[in-house]
Image (cartoon, rainbow, N blue to C red):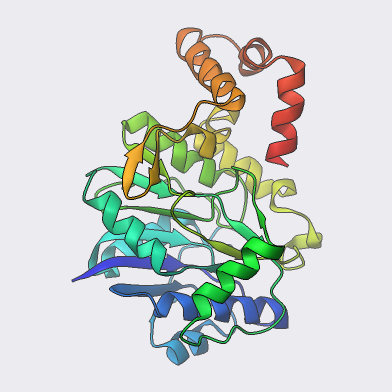
Length: 301
């Protein structure tokens, strides 16, 4: 039995840049110790990539009316075909390194129900990576030097025990809302929401949105509205890494440092619990004075 199963639904390998960054990401996953990889879908070039990298390929993923894979089907297939107690859904443009495995082991030894997530490092990658012996050190140095730490929104992976997330709605992958729901669900169930940003470097290879209809950001598509509906409304898709209950630092779980943004968020959640019968926008106006609303909007965008 392996420690962890990574599963993902890559985009078609037709665009040269998308194909290149996805190959970089998948290759990095295969180099991790004690990990299996499952690629889901029927996108152009996916079967060939799975064969090249020697990973599992499962084509029969349920899709919505537009042909986009459903998160619920991805979770079900990964659960059925994995050989691990831990599962991790991850976007196919994310490069993972050995510190990711160390974080998984550390958290698994301390909690039975949890979800692990983190902020990412955004980096322009224009060439295939050379996976030499020191590639991780070089990549980390480059990310620190010319990359940027992404805002605490838009999680690109979720690592969790197989016993968690057994009732995922039919969210559409690649659209907004479902990742926020993952945090909401964990908080609702009382699981630990663990931000491993202090311990792990996750590198996101920057790209445009030409793969989406009209080249628009995923926030601007009808499937995002449907994801929001399935999540239970706007309040449930406002959850971000700011809602983490713990951080992983030096192998230990600690409480996140209280900041003005976290304090405002805690106040909002408290008011929503007490005044659940009031409209969402009324609670938001009480919890977030206009200056904080503007600041949070800048973070979310």
